[in-house]
Image (cartoon, rainbow, N blue to C red):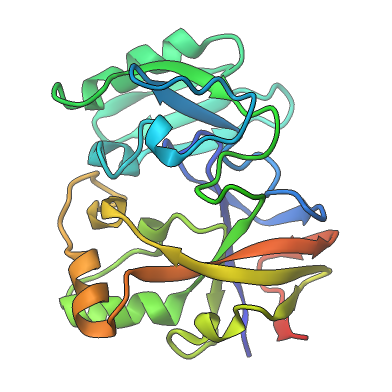
Length: 247
């Protein structure tokens, strides 16, 4: 039986993953708190007032070290605590103390890349890579298929998904495009496959590129896709362990 193995959000786009036990999803919206902030670099004009392409922000495709950041949100204060294996933990308010964050992340930035200069809060939807409000669903069996090709462990965190699924055959999720799902009390429309970038080559524990994920996808499976974008069509709660049904 297909079920939810894990729930994850990324409070600051590309800068930290956060585990959840359950979450209430709202029709037509992204996961609450997911990509709520994004890090604009010195060449970017993004200010959070509208959705912006991922190229407007610092991302793991250009800065692999940031893949190793993890996050915890304080529900009471709204503060974030970020951790990275090469840095001391920090706790800060993203809306009021962005300088603390920018100073903290600076040692991870390659000198030959556009530097991070401001933390922007999305005023519309979460700053997902899609230009419409989505969540990403990823399949453990598909990740295992990539790992088998590469002959190495491939963490699900490389794919930066929101809802991790188990109990499926590899690549079953691609057959869902255009269909509706029920997960827990929420319902979704599966819109499209997710085309992947070089960010997935970085190990989410170390931030070091150590796997040719794109080569495996293209060379063995004939595409560069992993996971699917889903739009919430019915408000409801999703909890780890919930079953997944095609409607």
